[in-house]
Amino acid sequence: MGKTALIVDDEMEVRRWVSNLLTTQLGFAKTMDAPSGEAAVDLIKSGENFDLIFSSWEMPRMKGDELLGELRKIPESQNTPFIMMSYKKDKDSLVKAIQAGVNNYLVKPLSAGIFMQKVKKTISDMEKKELDSFKTKRKNPVDIILGDDFSHPASLHSVTKSGCVVRAPLIKGGEVGIYSQVHLAIFMDGIPFKVPSELVALEADRVDSSTRHFIMVTFKFGEHDLKIDGKIDRLINSFSAANQK
Image 1 (cartoon, helix red, strand yellow):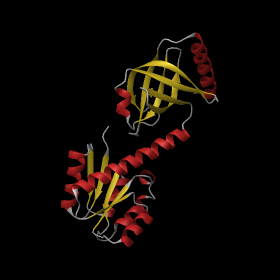
Image 2 (cartoon, one colour; image 1 turned 180 degrees about the vertical axis):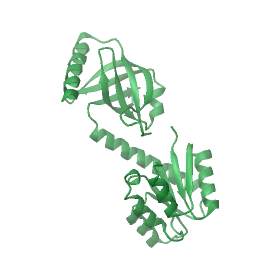
Image 3 (cartoon, helix red, strand yellow; image 1 turned 30 degrees about the vertical axis):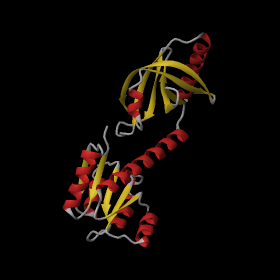
């Protein structure tokens, strides 16, 4: 699913320019805009969620840094990447913006090349942070091994003798879908064992239906020896016992 963005600026031309570039050049599925900080806060509080927020610094009444402070108080936008847009070019303003917690800074008038470069960098940083957090916190870890030099982290959601369902970040999610045959490195007692597997289905997240950042992936186990078969039996028993606690 494509990303979504909120564009906050009292200049209509800027809002339209940013929206056009995001949707036509950077593949964003949806953008919404607000002419003021107050309108942006109301939009977030109404239940709208965004992957990225752009805001002008110099707006009447609520300034961009004040908007950032308000958004960080709202659970739904506490961690949403925030890109400040400003006519201020001096070093002190840049330092102040960084100290306020912005993820990136764009100087007006906006340049298409620099804009796309910084948006891509912000998204890349966000995805790396999410991936690192998932790797650290995941329970029942599984690595989806794609080819010789790439693996995708996941966590075991359910398992049977014939296959399993894993929950995986949607980061680089398309790369999972292009492989029909993979290996799963399933961790048991901290030690992985590999099972040749076939990708059967990709589905929306079952754990949190509101998120756009995870998918469920169903695998069918391929042919394997008796040793691996015994490990799968142990995995089923330990997984079932853990979920009954």
